[in-house]
Image (cartoon, rainbow, N blue to C red; front, side, top):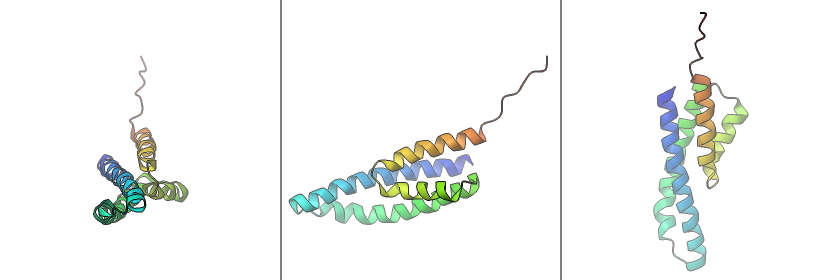
Length: 107
């Protein structure tokens, strides 16, 4: 499950950064009429968000998450800064489940 987690973590950060840049670009678009950032970053974020959805759904299937938790993680790429929070929550959850159990000595 580690490769799926790594793929998810990378795309979560990329989508999160692009969403913040896109948010700044949107503010600039409506305050200074400069659409350059939105025109450049908007399509990239849209495409990469679709990749985020696929990779998050793949990780959810492998980790056997509930439908509700999966939906929250999928939506995290639409709120600025939330994908970073979701990435930390997901990483902790997956690592806790896949961590080897401690070996007890019988001596």
